Length: 318
Ligand code: HEM
Ligand SMILES: *[C@@H]1O[C@H](CO)[C@@H](O)[C@H](O)[C@H]1NC(C)=O
Image (cartoon, rainbow, N blue to C red; front, top):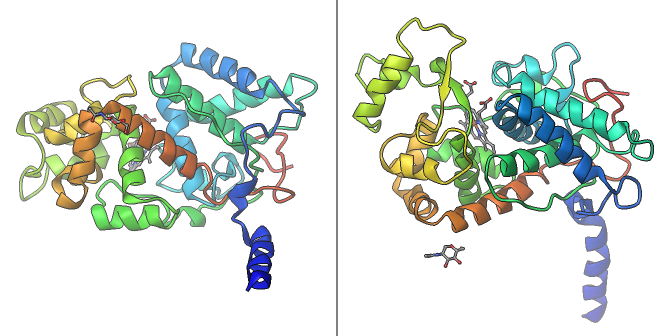
């Protein structure tokens, strides 16, 4: 009996999930100031444009859901992830934030070519959340950069704005994330912009306005997004506090002011409503759940040890 337990313990050393190797002090000996260097670069970029914040946050999500958090979304080879329709609206300022932070890290001789683009993106994401007034948290590090980015790998791996609860849950479950994680991460829509085309079917359909949409809000949306609107126009996703990371997103859902079907369904579906109500009434509970879910998101499919590489240029494989 004892022998079997020892044997199991021994085996578990080898089958432990790869994220077991991520740790907060990964660069302690190679680049001890990596966090302050990244924070300074991200803060400088933010002072130039607010889009730094939502652009970086969404980039991290799209990176992690496609081939894991390996910075594959940043690679610029032909037919890369960026070329997929689901990634074409990623803001250039998110990419630029990582490029600038990488340059800052590499300008320090002891750090040069030691820190992965995937880790820089994870750190920059933590920093933009704090810059927007959100919670601060420690970031696990030790990711390595992937060497493959294909348009095809994006297909069926990112959620769409017309998704209902079961579709959202199954896409997040595929990445080891629970319904509570999914609801907490959707709170990222407290920041940033959306093009009119992503929700046009809710305000202009043969069957009329989506009945789960607040009437007054629907009218405002129709004014901001008239039919045949310039496709470049983007509107705030959180109509109340668009530049602050807060729990107002959930209060908006309670009033029928979720922009996408995938937002509003979280309140409309009785299976997820209690969590929305909790996050709307208790910002501490929301912040805690968001940080826990971001940490789990940051472990998805990571390359560690001697897998992948430390890219010299985040847009190109070595
Ligand atoms: C739950 C399923 C989700 C769906 C269906 C979804 C869909 C979308 C769509 C359609 C847009 C607008 C894109 C555009 O028109 O430019 C958007 C923007 C955004 N999403 Fe999501 N998203 C989801 C989850 C997430 C998660 C988990 C995060 C991060 C943790 C996130 C962060 C963002 C941010 C920050 C923006 C604004 C981007 C900007 O202003 O540049 N989303 N999302
Ligand atoms: C809010 O959530 C926090 C964290 O889960 C919890 O400790 C606290 O008791 C909650 N506050 C209220 C008023 O329920």
